[in-house]
Image (tube, rainbow, N blue to C red; front, side):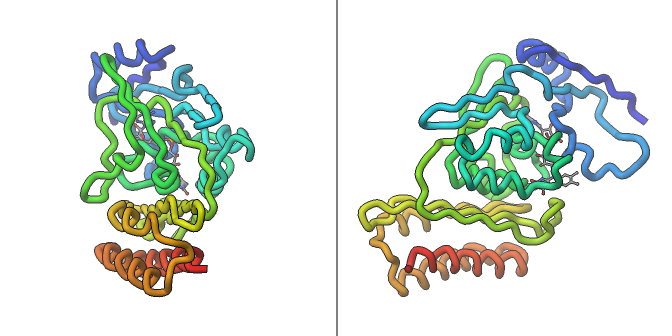
Length: 275
Ligand SMILES: Cc1cc2nc3c(=O)[nH]c(=O)nc-3n(C[C@H](O)[C@H](O)[C@H](O)COP(=O)(O)OP(=O)(O)OC[C@H]3O[C@@H](n4cnc5c(N)ncnc54)[C@H](O)[C@@H]3O)c2cc1C
């Protein structure tokens, strides 16, 4: 059994000092994902663990007219407590669907997005909303689009070695949104995935159309989106069938059950735009 040394830095600069000495240390936020598959009597953790749950730089929330900025160590319950006036409805709905109330009291948004074994439920919504995440390490910081947390192969690809500090969610008007969780609802099982859609029309033209689906792998097909955007509303029957077919084809690499559910959800989404 490994005896772990747990560090509790008081701020980011102390965290970076510890990371310099222990580059392989495990960042521990709510710990719900880290401990998810540990059913034994004793918890197994690596030699060095750094608790980031109370870091002040990761615990801030900032609301402006244009965006909501959420510290990575803010819990899902705390985010939901911000209420409907601050929170984009699509994000609120996704967070409400995660685990149980007691899990949401511990689980953080940063931990949800930084998970490397699969995509958790916040990713598809934040990908549709074009949210940005800030990663920092000792010498630098960078904002990256949440969509870049998925690699070319559709697998999680969060940067290694830094800490996610903030998530910036643009506040925009949407005319049509949809969120659907398929498979097991209360646990990240292999057949569980989340479908999210956000669309906006302007003067009879489809001005924005974003669609994301993710479980063990992520689908965000920006090349199809680019061809749908700019079309007159409502979409014609022919456009609906063409784009539905393209999405279904792109999803053919998914496990069959997920591909079928994705196809049906895309069809329902395109139906809304064809009315
Ligand atoms: C019973 C159960 C049910 C669950 N149901 C759901 C569900 O329905 N939907 C869902 O999405 N998830 C679910 N989860 C998974 C998990 O609870 C959530 O994804 C949660 O948001 C993870 O956050 P955390 O703070 O607990 O992460 P942690 O467990 O602390 O960390 C997860 C990973 O992210 C890394 N990390 C954490 N914070 C940062 C940061 N700021 N910067 C860089 N790396 C970081 C950690 O090193 C670790 O690798 C469930 C878990 C359990 C145990």
